[in-house]
Image (cartoon, rainbow, N blue to C red; front, side, top):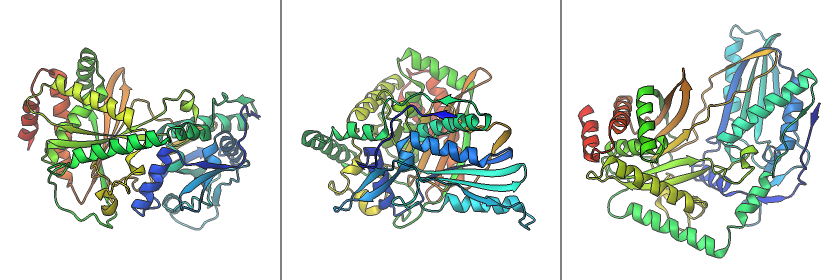
Length: 462
């Protein structure tokens, strides 16, 4: 039995939040309607109770407004969202037990792939798609595809944890009362709406005007790279996994404590120097994912909260590393304070070139996560992740995904590189990964050295 301790929102018109407006803008800018499909697939060995799963998903949708929302359009062509009172939800289920096929797993995998890259009709579809394929009496495949406009990384952790708890309560017959939510996502949107005074809009408009004027004055913001035509080109990406060793991370954490800084800031310094080298430019623009859940209670909600923090940095060879760390920290905090309204809200009015070229005004994107991922678990079943080609939800040249994690009592840093294969070849990225390792080691050894010495260490690798 499941006890709901929250109120239902009546069906009503709700504006898009600032993060949602950004995703809507970018999806239409790139004319790419699957770039924000985010999926995770599992191979399930053991019991998969479909009725319990349906009930758990229904309860989750009742609890979290974005899971029962859809979009509509006003007369001016801009979207708003409708929160449905009663979720209309089902699971796409296929039984292959009597399917005459020598490769049932391959067939199921293909079905999952097709479901992942099927566009959502945001005005009619549920923005959560659940697909289940029965392979045998005790084996299934299960996939969840959610549109980024209603979910972010923290949301996926919440979804997995609460679905696990709700499903377990259903199959065991236990009573479950999830903690009541402090507020709903629509109330977060209303809090953001209060920022939309004429004075605030004008202030943020001027902030972005000044920001990009400063970034594009003189030379291009990221310098010379291999020429490629990006107009109407769907980027193709490759990936590489890297682990930064515990001794390096340990030294960097010691330095961070001494400098009243963080490992994240040290990583940003290393990435700045690396990117400056790759693009042969002393001016670097970095875009950094930010959870944006400072409002108390937001950490409990499924929804699209995250913002992108964009910082512009000038590499100054005569600075000491500790001075560079202070500069990066200051710029990041200032940017976070002023970037509550994303630049995409003003892109057309600013006549930004990126709009015409269908490119972001930055080439490098960084996500940095301290919390370990959470997977769904089901009673009486073992779940293994099943890899499906997730495509991409980016148009940048390079994406860095960082995860801090403990391994045998020691901190390590996992790094996933995603890069455009029409911009960089694999050999270049492999050298760059070595450069990143060297930069972090050098910073961990001494922050009194000049930036120029680190630049030389990187150049020597080539």
